[in-house]
Image (cartoon, rainbow, N blue to C red; front, side, top):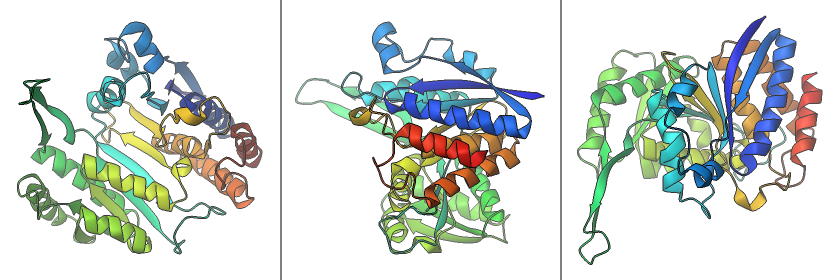
Length: 347
């Protein structure tokens, strides 16, 4: 029996609840599929930071390197640890350390889920550059605490970074409806975003079979609301992709359905899978968090591991459950109720 070694980082708040739910479903899918998932849990979180002064140990990246994949619940507890500390102490180092440059987030309405828009025929795959751009962390502050204080945040765009994310996007579009939308703000950002547009046009020459469109970020935000059915694959920078995928989550019914994958495409290091909703401290430990985004992220992990049939079965189980009215209304069904329903549908 083939065994995959998975690093489990439940993290903070509802991350612990949804990780437990998703792990039950993934284990059931593995049993049905004739393979095994061996999970190792790590307590790295804001609570760990308060105890140790770090979000993870100094050798955390090397510890994770031996695993086939990483499954993350959620990170953050802003009342105790600033988000800038938790993000730069755990999530971003993992993404950058393992060259997980492709952040993938699917946006579509599950059966039975009522989105805020009239349209229900959209199926969007947002691909966000995940290791550089606006979240590079380059910059600093001078004259801190004085009237002359200065803060500088520098966006870093490399030719290699832009080209590889665009090629990844084009490959995804080839396997879907052969439409790709590149998102920038090149009318205002005349260096980095014009550069992005230029690289995109160069890469597009190798993908004549894919229809390419160019949008400014504000126009794309409007299009995702007004005509989401017109979109297929969207490729954007770290910041713009972050914003657009929250719009995507909103139009698909809420963050409780927003799954994601942080992919190392050449598989030289593990990829990481996580729901997008964050730790939600306000509902932590109440048992009402929707685990569907976490389970969907687990299905994406199974797909990445090469267990496509098991991944499809998990997605089919999710869709069966939401079509029965279990899970579509926020707070109506408890975490355990939804989890057990998915497990029943899977079996």
